[in-house]
Image (tube, rainbow, N blue to C red; front, side, top):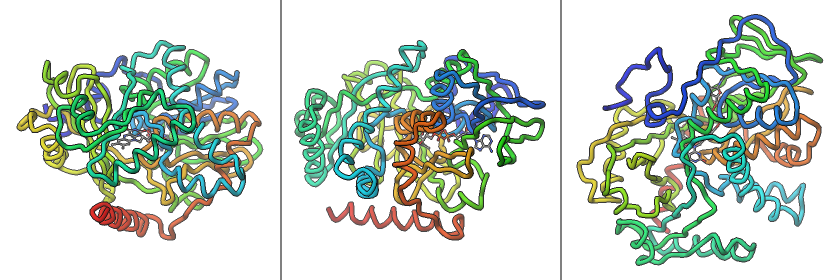
Length: 437
Ligand SMILES: Cc1cc2nc3c(=O)[nH]c(=O)nc-3n(C[C@H](O)[C@H](O)[C@H](O)COP(=O)(O)OP(=O)(O)OC[C@H]3O[C@@H](n4cnc5c(N)ncnc54)[C@H](O)[C@@H]3O)c2cc1C
């Protein structure tokens, strides 16, 4: 089955993908009709919106999520499923946050890097969410310069007492974990996770609903009304609230005066092969998620039914590639020559929100209207961290929010016209640097 060529069916209205074909339980929340009043209304039903809703509902607030399509329809339901300890812009964050946090900045970032893992694990166990959650990543080196970076990461982890969770592997060590000749070493990390992201997102929405949250699907928000009692407006309804959280990432066009030019779409493609049976265990006996050290990297893992789910590259045209399988097959066969000619059952793509300096963008549009977006391809853990930070901010604890909000947000004038070409040039530059190191 070549999933991307299938039309969207009325039954699911999701992008066809391995995830939509294997979701635990399809959602069926109603569209918003008429007028509703809550404490907080959240625009967007991806991880940012849903994780914030769970946090707020657990604190006793009446919450509503308004989603233009379906819960998990965007990047949250279509990504690689790898929960890493990277916040994407760690280095830039360290530089900027030193101004507000001083010497505490390194501890702040280190703790934040693992906070999302804890939130996800607790939530999965607390609400019994079936999302194929597993531990273990290999960050794989393709040349000695990569290995030097991994050694530095390992040294930092040891210094901070996390050495038990990590192992440095040489070429032979990697070979005993993966049936691939591509790598000269790797950092094995048992703290990192991988999972079925769509089932996690839908499971978290269900948890929020069980705590009283209202959820509306097929309800694009057309406008945000600011004022002492803000509101969001859809074609057939309106939600009045005390506070509004805008969590539409790169998919929304709201508040263009303030937000246009801050975040840009990069299209990423993923495929899933046919089930590999016993071969899966030979290729990756410990069922680890793998990603390499290049700036434009390949990433892959096995699914619960033993397919290879493989992603890589991205483009800044804002358009889907016509032949994702054709683009990714050489990477699969270079990594695992044993898979030459393997059948590809699913291919799909999705936009991720990229910000120029890679620092998640948290801010306020008015006294009671907030936004949170832009994890530059590292959003599973980060969105959950931000959900906690936003829920704290909306309930009066502003410390971590203020630390992020004080970071410089780079706005590109005439955003749509110049932002994506700038990112494409940046990617080309980094690919050149990659060749030279
Ligand atoms: C191909 C790909 C692979 C990735 N792999 C990984 C990975 O392995 N690990 C990792 O950590 N991260 C990964 N990411 C990044 C991660 O998926 C995202 O950073 C994260 O899911 C963003 O979550 P979000 O809720 O902010 O946005 P989204 O999940 O995109 O959700 C935004 C939602 O808002 C809704 N919306 C927009 N406008 C409106 C409106 N006006 N009214 C109502 N609703 C609206 C949209 O319909 C959408 O459902 C990947 C991303 C892509 C695209």
